[in-house]
Length: 545
Image (cartoon, rainbow, N blue to C red; front, side, top):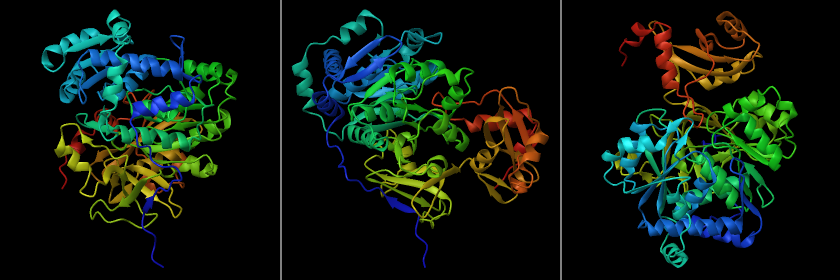
């Protein structure tokens, strides 16, 4: 019998949402006016849905008073706080495109994002973690001809902006908007090259947020702790939009990630769901007083942003009471989620796959050289298509055409396999794949094996140049507190359990990995550092076809 192709389309018994983000929030507020919508633990602010909807209207009116037209861009450069949420929904309500600025950006990156998107306005924090945001804005402002207005939070200017009264004008503008309008520009996290501005519509992200929430079985009774950054899809779509489309409550534990404040927020606010990238959960589980926190209110959550270690996932289920925790897979360019594990998937599926395709989305795994769909079980490039695929990269049709083909398939650059039941496993990035002496090695497989070593808290594997084999493996390892580990220990652990060509030749014990703010490991930096530290410059200089 002919093998099944690696293709799947997501069924649904719920229709797509055909309204704008602003209208959807108003609908939720009408259904649950007195339900708690937003808690900001740092400031003590609490809002019901009635109060949140009114505050969004007032800020939207303020944006119109600034003269911002439909399609104008407004930058938001701040850590997680209630004003971020208000700005997200207020811009959507009046058709102003929100440009998310990474809080870790410095002058060069800030100037690039504001200039490339043509922002007319910027809302920013005064400072965060010792960085003077206003001084950095002034440093680049002369290079930004489009930037007319800068408003800092905790200032009279912000208070005035947030107290607009022209609600009739807001209603009139809202009536002119289409769900297909662009409403958000998110710059890719820059693990390689210059950031690209993924441009997303109301339809893209309100639906993706809704179906993510469906995957977590959210209702108006849920309280979702969101320590992941709002500037990223994980915070503003998997977080805010998944919550508000279901009438649940957004809980902001702190402006930036802090494992203690996160667990305290879960305990004090009786959160039912907790989000994080794997490194966040690792940090929480590693707290010396972890066992003292009451996490019994938790039932679900999402682990995403980078590959989720199986051993960490098991501890989250067993020790954090997150029996229904799900893994989501996606990318900014797809709003972001394409696949998700489900609460009723067995534990093995939930700890070892990224789930099945989302409703109204198609996925396929192709041979990157021929473009043809491979058989189930064979690795290839994962492609996705559907309502969730971005409109394109802002003002960059060339780079858009490099990733979205003529049939509107988004080529993710991720290597994946699909099993007979349609579950997907991410086995690496096409660019991360290591070819050692003609053997293809997927670092993810080696990492998952090394995670089972009792002394290893975290591990990443990269390919480094080798004169004989072309490439060799280098394992970067974070050792558990109180443990020690040598190169010989690692090789002995692998011997007889992994094929010889998968055993790392080099081991580097480190305290942390180079990462983006969202917890994505920057493997190209690890490779560069490894070449330097291991003296592999000569091998790196060898030219290959």
